[in-house]
Image (cartoon, rainbow, N blue to C red; front, side, top):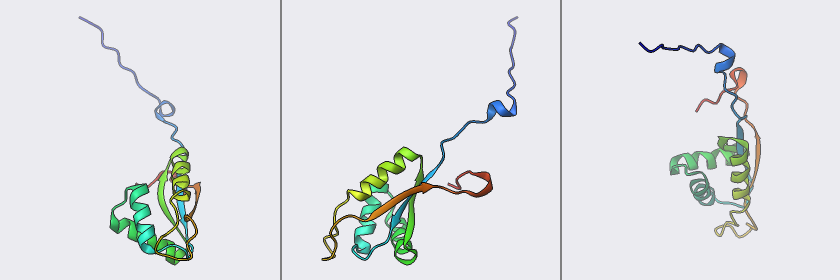
Length: 115
């Protein structure tokens, strides 16, 4: 009869190091309309219109809004895409894209995202 081997992992062996999560943060300005922000958020992040509207409302009211929490490389790409999105054709004073920053996500003591 063949022998069955059983392996038991210790607590430290089970721990998998995850990359640090980063927020893509959209910054407010007066040169872009809600329509522009909603369209950009839908195109770049794939959020449904309701979520895109909530982000637009937050950035307008609070001056900034998190669009996505992800690993650093994707956060950098999304920031670059925001900076490349173009001016808002609906606002005469709009001369270019919106601004965005990336920052480490802070999830409190457990250091784990809620999503």
